[in-house]
Amino acid sequence: MPGKLLVFEGVEGCGKSTQLQILHAALLKHDSLQQLQRRSLISQVLATREPGGTELGLGLRQLLLGDRGGASMASRAELLLYAADRAQHVEEVIKPALAEGCWVLCDRFIDSTVAYQGYGRGLDLGLIDQLNQVATGGLVPDLTLWLRLDAEVGLARTRQRGAADRMEQANLAFHQRVQGGFEALAQQHPDRVVAIDAVGSVEAVAAEIFAVVEGYLQQWYAPSLTA
Image 1 (cartoon, helix red, strand yellow):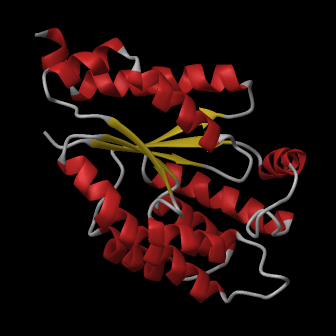
Image 2: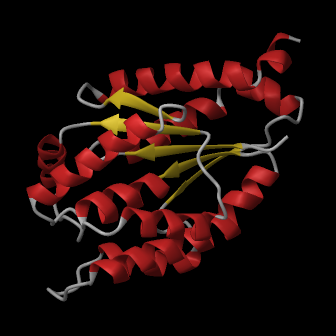
Image 3: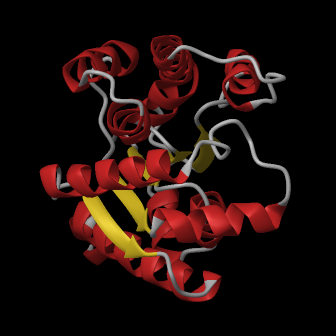
């Protein structure tokens, strides 16, 4: 049985990376998941990220998010670098893992490109959809957990962490457009995008995420879990 792709999305500072790690740890100990593993319906749970989920991607991540000493990057160049990272990531990591029956938890995927480079940078959404199709071979998440948070609140959180990466350094107006992009995507894809209130404590957000994932697990594997 093929695995499942679960993606965490949201604006800067929404807590998605932290929540992905919490869910990853919780699933490794989850009784139902262990039962499915014993029946060879799930092989393992893998955590990964974009950009940077492969050796090639680590270099691309540094180009995309690292300190460039004030040097600018054209929006289309940025878009193509993200697409290159995703193409390598899908072929090297995600598709093989799904074929083995893994659950793949991914920090950012296609929706981030639409929100950041489409809504944020103002690039053509049709072009972005075409590039996403090329980079993924048509792969879409089984579930997208969108951690909904006001962009200004998220940026305030990132400032508390210290040095900001290149994307975090963009102005508030850019991040508000990104926020609007995620809101539009949630409306366009209600079949796979679930909004999670990211305002509360880490523990409260984690509990809401786990409840959502538990519901999908029961839905996806109901016959096997009741047998």
